[in-house]
Image 1 (tube, rainbow, N blue to C red):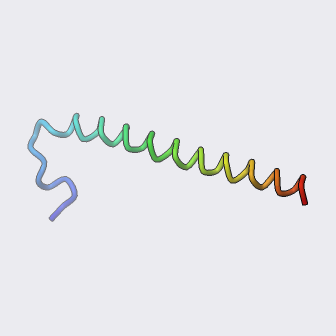
Image 2: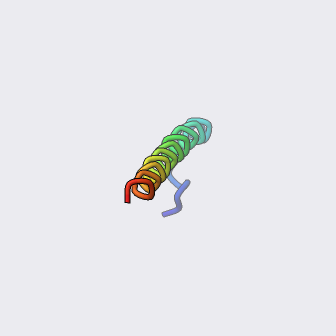
Image 3: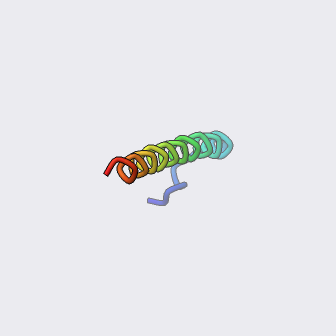
Length: 48
């Protein structure tokens, strides 16, 4: 079964929009995790 095998013909636009939303959510999650770990690393450097 292909990844795009079972989609009806009208669902390509919807799936690309959902992929954009999913990609932006994953990107923001990775960005915030990196931001908070970087801040924690800097605090660790300054405290210890």
